[in-house]
Amino acid sequence: MEEKTIRYPHPNGEITILWKPEKCIHSGICVKTLPQVYDPKGRPWITPEPATTEELIDQINHCPSGALSYELSKD
Image (tube, rainbow, N blue to C red; front, top):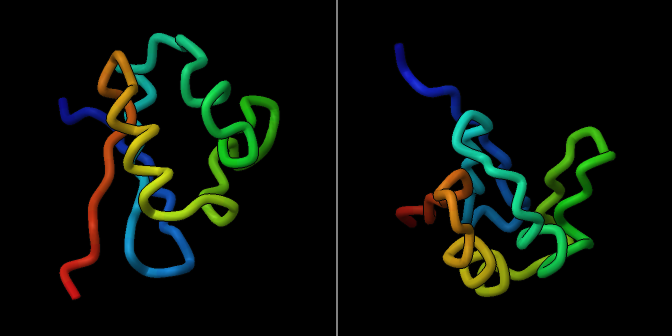
C-alpha cells in the first residue's frame, strides 16, 4: 500500500510542501521554526504563504522523521 502524501503548494509557484502523516513523529520542530506556516490546530495545518522558498527548504531539511519534504518547480 502506498504511503499517503498531502501536497501544499506555495502560491509563488516555486515550491510544494509534501507531508506524509504516517511518518510524522510530532517533534514540533516545524511549528517551533515557522509557526506562521505550521499550525497544528489550523485547517489546513500548513499554510506556506507567509514563508519564502528558502525558509521552507531550510525548515523542511530539519524534519527529523522525513515526514516533510518538498518539490521545486521545474520552470
